[in-house]
Length: 178
Image (cartoon, rainbow, N blue to C red):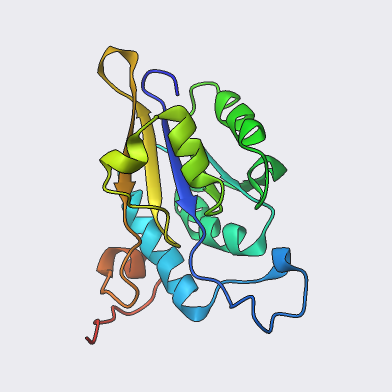
């Protein structure tokens, strides 16, 4: 990433199970908990100046990205270079094509760790092997002295009260029951 550029790699939220899904995997939607996670991601981007929201063609990635894009008045761009099973080199070409714009890329658990490791070697270990659970975010940005750095943000808690996000979508606040 270039100086000042921030790239948010968001793994799609929880999706319907593959087991028993009879249609094309790319059409597998978010589960009800995944929709809640996607709404929970919106507050993560409050105060961020997103210029672009780019998604894998998979429906679950698009559904994860849509509430965030809507909050910023942006459309969701679809790019096969971040599809499940896509090459790291193709995803890197997308990252390099951003031209200094801060962007969110909604993609998959096979690609995000590979991108993080390629752009910020050793980041996965430095973050305690955080991995890439569904709904999690990796922030890549240019650090001091031009060195890239990565930060891990865990998935939002499903069912957690989110008054600000809920107000945005006109949904009454909920309370988590544990």
